[in-house]
Length: 411
Ligand code: HEM
Image 1: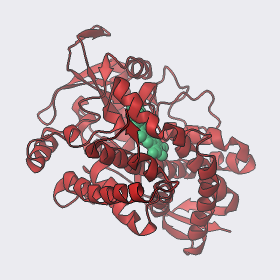
Image 2: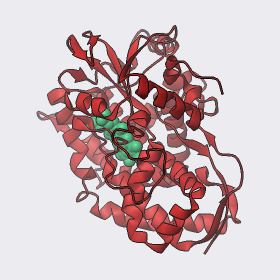
Image 3: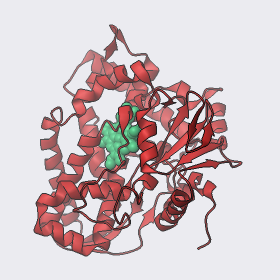
Image 4: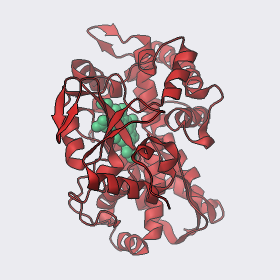
């Protein structure tokens, strides 16, 4: 394989080849903590490769902010968004917690925060365990062979849609909307009219939910979002839609890619599968390793609010920094033998959920889902093997294994 140039970190296809990606990232980590990337397709940005720097930047949230962009958008994507929206940038059309800073961010995050703590999730966990068992039943009943990605895509989707109170009939639309917006660079997930068209369609559904939950409050997360008030006022409609969007999208395909990638890692490392079978109490630890290994969110961006210096590089106010999580999670300075998948790795200070004030709101939910599913699967599986070639998402933002043919015998 020929050596990739540094700007390949901003190319969607790079992420479809895990080995090529990590060869590139290892080289970039070794040659410098920060790389200035300039290409014809993107605004120039700084690539941050090392665990310690990502940690420090995320914690320095006044100097490195989330507005006005959470992720890299190519110049082409930016132009397409402006053309379709009559000149507005994506960030102006809807606001969500991941794009806010300071007090604003805290106030918006507080709205749903208590729902997502381990205590807040107590009721939800029982439902998750029941669903994990249903989905493993589906595998058992479906003839001993199939694409594991279909199960992995449906289970976390069902969980978050149950929490939102969205009926099962709307789930295929929600899945399509997530894929067409968060993984819109992948040829399998293109929307007619682009990601913005998919977003507008979803907004129609969310707006109907808001009207309903104000008239008929229930005990679901949709009711919390639709009726949230700050300083006594309902949130502006674009912000409510942004809230629905971030919870409905961030809450499932990320977890799905941890499931598919975790399954692949276990199939490729049968001794780790056997360790888990022999001692299921290792599961929470194994899930941390799965999260490190798969790193479903590939990057978030920060923007500098002032001129500063990082490792001798002059960062200017307004400069964009790409925090590359797969790179941080293979950093040799933090992880011993980072390219070994070891379910009993301890400590495991991975950054799959980020850190600092924006640390993933759904981290405990995602962990519960992964532990519940793999516990059920491993306890009922007599045999499991790879039955074809896995395929990965082309995308710089969220991704992982999107097709995973397997053969199995499940009781
Ligand atoms: C394995 C699954 C998941 C991974 C790898 C993941 C990863 C991430 C990452 C890297 C961030 C950015 C953190 C930062 O900027 O420091 C984030 C933010 C976020 N995640 Fe997750 N996530 C997952 C599952 C979920 C779930 C299940 C939800 C449920 C709703 C969720 C909701 C959110 C929200 C709302 C934010 C924005 C938080 C903020 O900006 O304050 N995520 N996630």
